[in-house]
Length: 150
Image (cartoon, rainbow, N blue to C red; front, side, top):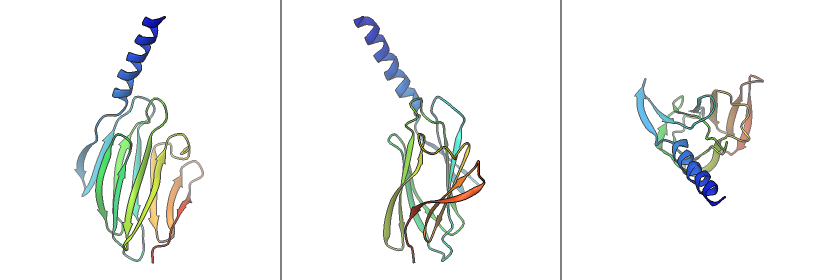
């Protein structure tokens, strides 16, 4: 029994180490793309766009438990993009810190267990009154996070 438990523990440790690979970046059309790989499911791409109409520049720093995607300065219409697969335990979580007009906001940008409306392309729109998430099945924007940037 002891050998079985040790074998299972070792396999889980190996699988956990294989779930997330360090972020690699590449420049494409002036947008830096990050790639994070897990073991299961279809690749998902998160696109976070600055849609703050007043022309506010956003400093966006997104990360997961294992990967820091770095600080990105987004002017109106610019976006940060990264791709990944959910880990085997469906605990994949990315969150961001955003600085805009001398205010700081922290929010979850993707959570595997609850973000069922994102099937492949996870569109996010940062606006004056909050963050909007694209609902792919219903084809509409949903306001998920509220703030006020004036």
